[in-house]
Length: 286
Figure 1 (cartoon, rainbow, N blue to C red):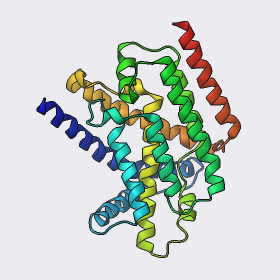
Figure 2 (cartoon, one colour):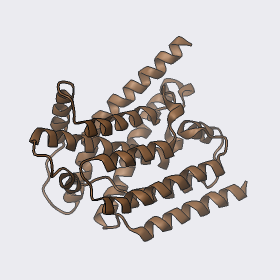
Figure 3 (tube, helix red, strand yellow):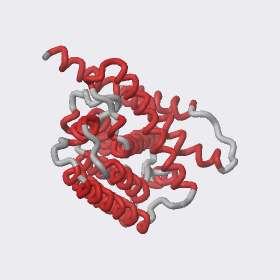
Figure 4 (cartoon, one colour):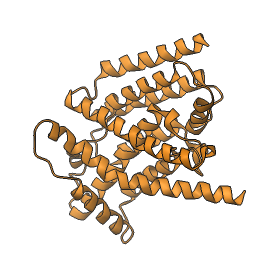
């Protein structure tokens, strides 16, 4: 029993470190990949990785502002809760998509000084889609207990329509509430006169963005999360699947940005409706 607890804690710590290492790379992809596709010259991710390293070094030496510290704490807690490689994490029982999603959206509202009118138009539809996602999971997989239970259930017995419905919900979330752009973050932090504090707040925003992408990736392909019973081979397969589904969500977000389809209310409603139809069709087919 003690060995199982230690392994679960070790996996949780490992996934947090791994995902934090991926954060600057994903931030670079979101920022520079659209520019590269448009024919602009871009640099590699070295600058983002170096900035992230300086941020974590400074975070251990000096305290963050209370608001930024709370946003970072919410982000790190979500990283530890959500399933990454397998469902064997120590906090997997807390991986409720509605709860984690709302925490991340609250953290987004606390980041800097957002325009409440503009941000409300993004956050409110995202909350509604998260509620729809939770309802569809309860409808199509009533025995699932959060994302961990859903992943295990899908490995044992596929649920017709649910995976497609979750994919449609992810598209609705990606359209209604995409990750913050660099310009959005800078606008929120205009009131900060201290350059060091502003740079640290930008890194917190990158972590928050990455956790939101991670949540979307888990919802998009829960079947790709491995089970702890699969052993070492299953662990490596789960690691590869983690990288693949994060890259998939990043590519979707970049495509939405390039096609100027972000924050489209019509597309959000369309994919939410598609998700509901797929879940109902799968439910009645069984």
